[in-house]
Length: 117
Image (cartoon, rainbow, N blue to C red):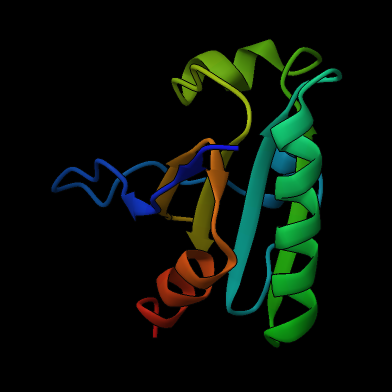
């Protein structure tokens, strides 16, 4: 399985894109929110889900939400999601701070969360 590096999202001088609880269907985490876009037959999506669930269980204030890309095409288009899995890491205010396409490594997700502090 290929892994993906977690990298800084393209954030413009206006602060970048912001997601709220209404747009993702859950309350934002007090520290961060891990937003995963998945599709039904995506094997790496299952592995990504396990990693992100582990991370959200380990780190206080971190919430994981898995969004069905096919059922949320408007959001997929608005965020330029081109493949699954794609993971967005939001700060506590909902700003997209990091983005990964493909299977992320647990250590990379933890490091990215550490950079939010």
